[in-house]
Length: 517
Ligand code: GLN
Image 1 (cartoon, rainbow, N blue to C red):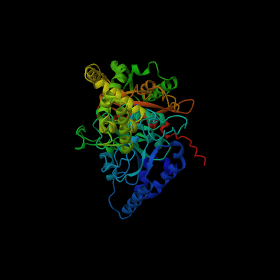
Image 2 (tube, rainbow, N blue to C red):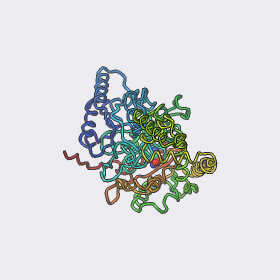
Image 3 (tube, protein in one colour):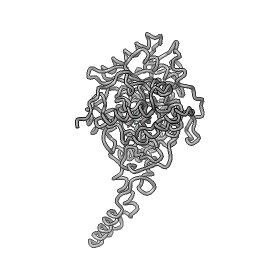
Image 4 (cartoon, rainbow, N blue to C red):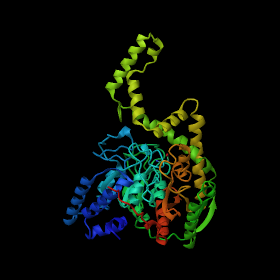
């Protein structure tokens, strides 16, 4: 197996035993990026120089026998939603295209403390709103299995770069499925931790009560390795949970005797693609053959999950994104042109004696806000801001936002009841496999339905993982989703690992064509 196709846990052993150097590993991934990322476009920026410098330093320190961090010399790609000190963090938006954070997100600080090598920032849907990475203000990412398809989203770049062996590990964020859905579409393993497990400090907020940061990797073991580094209580995030940190990796081989799996009746209904259903069915049989007991369960309120999510997430987004006004934060319109236009408009209105028009004319500040926001945000972000502002407005708040919060509680109650009978919940990650680029851009509702099986975990705050479990006749990966009660990531990873010990879907790699010069 070549270096870049080795799991991160194996690379780490090779690095520790000095069979390879951090520079060799980093260079191998940079070469792969140079060769193929012209087509996949998973990165918004690649930090080649600083990565190689950091790798050289680690090699020297290892040579001197100094103690090193637990990921020493392993490249990690990071979704461009996490603040990196001195390195542009655009969040996939023109609004933040020039934003250079003066600090590191806690997750980044932890990666640095573990001596991981930050190799690049990955592409994403603008402000993490979307399911295809086509809402990036810069360019769409493609699916390495078929470049005419999307990699999913919003962590499309983070999933695609792992699938295309451009990084052994990456970090994504998941508000309604943005780690699990792209992991499913790209044939990699992606974990959304329990709300509160991983610090959100320095994560650019989309919907603060739903957002979680998590690992993408080629195996459950690798995801466990990365989660161990990034998880843990953080006083800088008031929603970070002060709970014990198990060693996810040390216990991953422990068998799960008598595992009780719950199969959600509502996740096998209309809308589920036949081939996806068949692959998931096969995966469930695999669990049964390893001693798991499968029983059907019901999450009766899951039929309201999409509607609930698409009220709550936009409400929170409209509030979070109010700060980007061109004054406090973010892109600012061309002020000189704006003032000149305003003066011209005033002159014409005055010449026409239009008193009402003059009275209605924007103040310069209002015009600055309006233009900065309308030029800085893309169409999906604007749609969400409008949806959220409407649902929160006086007279509608109780009917939409408050009602959605009540349904959210019922969705969590469904899970609490289900987890009294089963240890994990199993089903498809998404209703279909990767769809074609451009196929859904004009149909936001169809795009929102992609999140049918994933949003409930965010609404309930529980943990979920997607692992590859099959391939369609057209050669696209199918994702299996496992969900666990709050803070049971260890159980989730052990089950995913058990599945990967018995199957080889996670070892499959796409055949990539380099860009023709
Ligand atoms: N696709 C969902 C949305 O557009 C989820 C996004 C996410 O998890 N960040 O909101």
